[in-house]
Image (cartoon, rainbow, N blue to C red):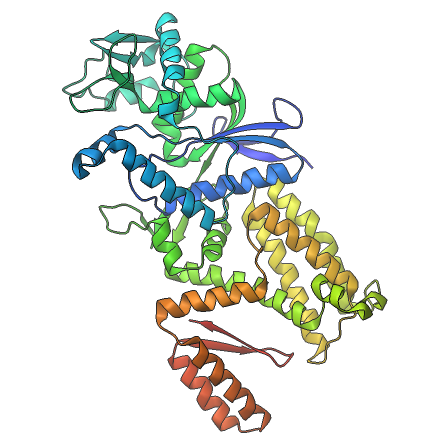
Length: 500
C-alpha cells in the first residue's frame, strides 16, 4: 500500500515516491535557541519524529536533518538584555531543548547542524546568487531580488501584487525593493560577525536553512517539514534561494504541522498563555504529553486544555490498564516464559468472543498501517488500537475473576502489536507497573496526595467489601473522592485508582 502525503506545494494529497528507491532525505526546521521552548516546538518535534519513525518502520533508509538557528536577531537581542554572551545563551537553550525532547521520547535526527558551523556554505550560496543575478550587495549587506525569481510565491500561493501592497522598507535598510530580503547583514557595533567578501557581517535567517539542507541532502531532496507558520516567508524564501543558486527543484514534498492553541486561543506571550515544554511535563506525565500531541493528525490544529489533556491521559491509561490486566491474568509473553503450562494452551479462538478478538487482532496491523499510509494519520491509527482494546477488555471481562491463561495466540499478538506501537508512535513502551507508579508519584506530587494512604484506604475498602460491609465500603469510596481519587473495580477483583 503506497504512502500518500498532503503536499503544501501542490495543496493536495499525492503518492509519496522517494527520489532514490528505498531512501528518504528529510529536512525539518529546528529552533532558534534564545529562550525556553514552548509546546508548539514540542508539537513540531513529535510530529516529524512520528513521520521519521514510520518511514523507518516500513523499511526506508532515512537521512533526517534538523537544524539549530544559533545566530539570529532574537539571540542577539537576548544577549543585550541579559548581558550574557550569545554563545552561552544558545548552548544553554539547545541543551534544555534536547533534554525536553528526550523526555518526550523523540529520536535524535541523523544530523543536527548549527548555522554558525556553516557560514562558508552560506557565503558560497550568496556569491552564486549574485553571479546569477538573483541578489545584490549594498554597503556591506546583500539582498535577494525577489522579482528576479519568476515563480516566487509558489509554495505560499501568494502573488507579487498582494505582497507588494503590504511590504515596506525599514528606516535603516538599503534594499532596492520592499519585497527583497536580507541574505547577509552588515555588522553593527557589538554584534557577532564573520568575514565575507562584503565585509564583516552575519547571515540572514532564510539563507541558513537553504545552505544547510542542500549541504547535507543535495538538491532536490524528498521532504521539507516545519510548522505551518514557516510556509511564508521562511520556506518560500528557502525555495527562492536554493533554486536561484541551482536552477532545479529544491524539494519535492513540503509537510507542515498545525498550530497549538491554549484554551481555544492562539498561544502567545502577550496573552500570557505561553506554556513551555518543561512546564507541561511538570504538570503531566511526559508519555501522556506525547500521546496528547499525536492524538490529532499532525496537520490539524490542536487545543491544549486541562480537559483535553485529562482525556488523553485517560485514553493512555486504558492501554496500560489492559496491559496490566493481561500481566495479572498471565497472558503476557513474560508470564508465558515463567509458566511452562501456558505452552499447552490452545493455539486459536474457541468461542464467539474469542473469534471477535482474533479477528480484531488479525486486522489491527492492516488498519494501523492503512491509517499511517494516509498522510501519517496517527489519529486514525490510534482509533484502530483503541477499538481492539475495547474488544480485548470485553473478552477479559467475560472470563471472570478466575480467568486462566489459556490464550497463547492472544498473548503473542498483543506483544507484537505493542512492540509496533512503541516503535512507530513512540508511546506504549513502558511496563504497566512502571507507568502507573510514575503517574501516581507525579500526580501525587502535583496534588499533594499521600500515595501510601490511598493504597491503605483501598485495602480497607476491599476488606469491607469481602465482609459485605457495604456502608463502610461506600464511606471509604467517598473519602477517596474528596481526596480527588477515583477508583474502578475490575471484574477480576482488583481495584484501579487515578487522580481526577
